Length: 134
Image (cartoon, rainbow, N blue to C red; front, side):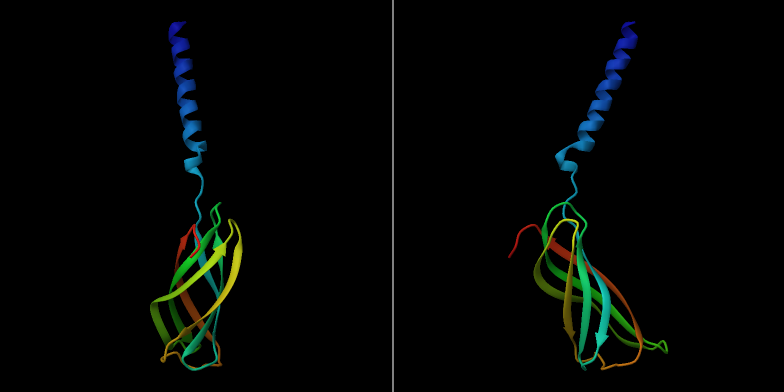
């Protein structure tokens, strides 16, 4: 009987510990902001327009501070038109928890062609954020 009581109390203790660790405030999601590129436009020589949005996948409001962008542009015939990596864009935009904020910015580089035909693009972004403005 004592052994059964001990096992029951031990199981209760283990379950209580699991509940406390999984439901504690320290287990809450933090802000996590990512920039997604939706469109790239080329109209002016030396400039690309980048349209996209920030999404905060965390449960706390935060500010997007800067974005690093890797971008490559390929013509319909498969020829690489332009490519660059680590293109940094500084900003200070509030992105509420679980929300989207649309944002457009411009990249300037003398090697970006003026191009009005169809092309494809590939991008990778790395967004840095903070919970404080400024």
